[in-house]
Length: 96
Image (tube, rainbow, N blue to C red):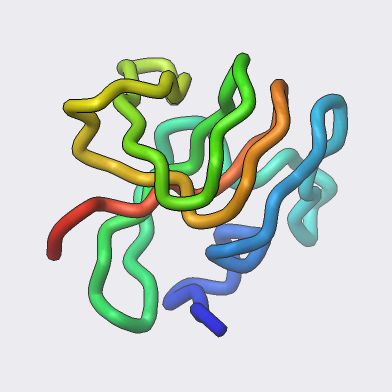
């Protein structure tokens, strides 16, 4: 299980939030925001993102400045688990 280094950032690093759902922090604000960065327990950089298309676990993704992920063969991040269209997740850097 991958942990998050800062619990205030919301869902666990391998948790997927379905389309139309959100994680609310203690002030009932949506957290994290797309593009937020965290590091997992293994030292990999993670970015909170969303995808308009389905992604398979381990598939490479590119992330734009608004936190949108898109499947690409040259992406610097990967989908840690299977992602359905509209899901939000912590994309994982391919390398440390």
